[in-house]
Image 1 (cartoon, helix red, strand yellow):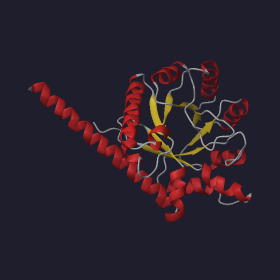
Image 2 (cartoon, rainbow, N blue to C red; image 1 turned 180 degrees about the vertical axis):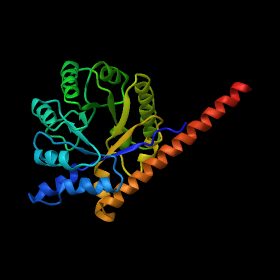
Image 3 (spheres, rainbow, N blue to C red; image 1 turned 90 degrees about the vertical axis):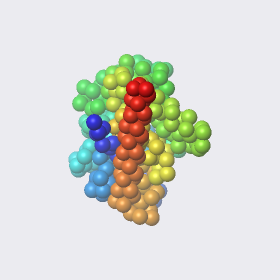
Image 4 (cartoon, rainbow, N blue to C red; image 1 turned 45 degrees about the vertical axis):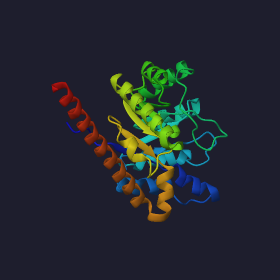
Length: 263
């Protein structure tokens, strides 16, 4: 049986980064979100940070009113952000770690070490009808803790894979594959993201059982040269091609084992 088509969530934070660099009203992340949807994005991801370096609260409120797909609100586990999510009620909320000095999220959420706070936040968001995802490293202890915390979804941090090459990248890919298998066995929905680009995304999309990839920086950077709609469409084609290749490979592996069983 063919798996459900893998989804693409487009993160538009860096459209807002460009706007905030000059304090203008353009480029407008809301306009970018609508263009991304037209090009095939299955959802729009935004991460209003504590210092509001890119996405502003006003952007989140406007997006909640106009999106045709669904919003994935990435946020730190703070009272301010929880209150915003309870007001906006986005379809999805992804809880992420956040340090003010970092350029981008540097690692997964430590669910094990912050279990009570994460579990309490998950309950609050679920009460506001938000599907909660936890952004975690591909480690068994974090996956188990995410399940115990009541989150129905995890997003595996692919940064370590994206930063490596050769054998080291293959080892990270194997970790992500094993983590996906484990999470699926626990009944979790598995997404992935961070550092994915046009050169490395197909191998991740080929991991069986992945539900959605969230990608931002690479798409916005590519959009400078080909336009946003084409950049989104290109990424969508790559992840679907990657998923198809993974599906074919898994069928061939199944047939190979089946033949050995008969031998």
